[in-house]
Image 1 (cartoon, helix red, strand yellow):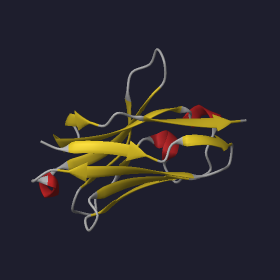
Image 2: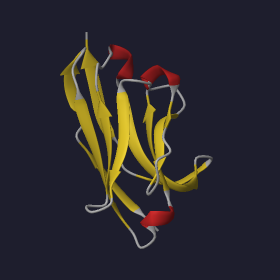
Image 3: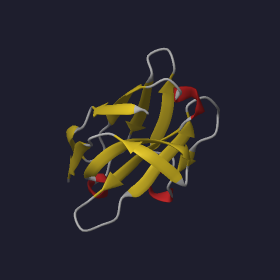
Length: 118
């Protein structure tokens, strides 16, 4: 079992930056795939970025490629999502998730709101 707590959301102007953090706890973190999802009202949750807890592979959805960076810090058991050049369409609740693979995210944080004003 993995517990996830997000932080770092807020209000930012278009073109600005935010860094989301996800503090993770659990005995088997090293075997997990970590992901950041986002969701807006009336839409399905979307996988934004993913990376294994240990490893170099990263995935980004097309709309954030080149603007967002996912990373892990195993020393402090934290996953980050650095978001640059933010756009109003990035406005959403962002969720941290952990799972056995990119097709099977099983553990979720409570979510953090990101609002980008134009």
